[in-house]
Image (cartoon, rainbow, N blue to C red; front, side, top):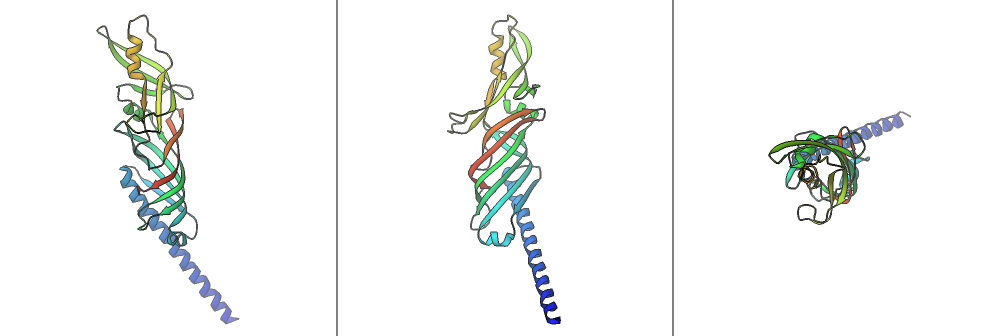
Length: 242
């Protein structure tokens, strides 16, 4: 009986050491991957990575991870060649095939979300307008100033935000999606040319998925007080810029 107790104790100790080594390894891998993602996305915010599945070492040796979740405070997308801040970027990568040197991998599929705040959407407009919540789903308030007949006229309009297919991506690239902002109505008050002048500023299309991991694209959006919420998904999605 004493011998059996010793065997049980040894097994328990070895098991605890194995679990401890596995947890240390997954923690180290999560930290390194977070550093790599943060550098690739050129973000000043924090990056968090969680690798799911146990044991981790068995997954690592097979070069395939069940699931990897990533959380970024912010990341830089690109709108027509200009950086556009994406906030609260969340993504879940499933079936990640690691490359040979473990510097990254490709996920069989991925889903995620991000938010474009109104100040950041204002920057993306590139027309000097100011955007705010429009008071209803899929609506934003757009304020613009124009010169008409020697007068500076400022108008605020309620616009609808939609996601549309991009014929050329807005940048010479085929496919993808564009965020489209269109004024529902522009008060003209009988002033010739005011509606077209206002619309030249308030109506715009912007591509926001450039800069996301390769294979991850915009698939939907909603609007509320916090900003424009983007839904992301894709297949064969690059992880850590691999």
